[in-house]
Image (tube, rainbow, N blue to C red):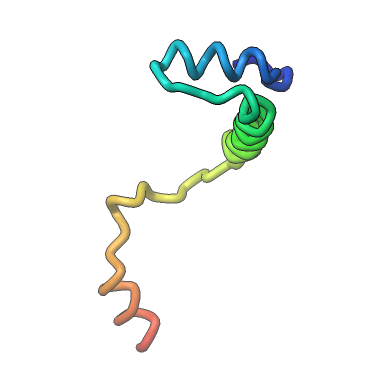
Amino acid sequence: MSSAELTPPEAARWAARAGLSLPDDRHSVVAATASHIHSVVAVLRELDFGDTPPAGAFRAEQEKRDAAV
C-alpha cells in the first residue's frame, strides 16, 4: 500500500485477492480502518528505540525485584 489512502474499491480488490468475501456496504469502512492502521504503523516506524533491548531480553520478575530494592 502506498502513502495514499486506500480507496473502497481497492479494499474490495485486496479482500477478494485474500479470498475474503466483503459485502459492498463494508468497502468504505474497511478502507478507512486499513488507512488508520497504516498511519499508526508509519508513526511507529519513525520511533528511535536506540539502545532499547529486544523484548526477549526483558525479565519481568527481575525488574519487579530490582524496583522493590
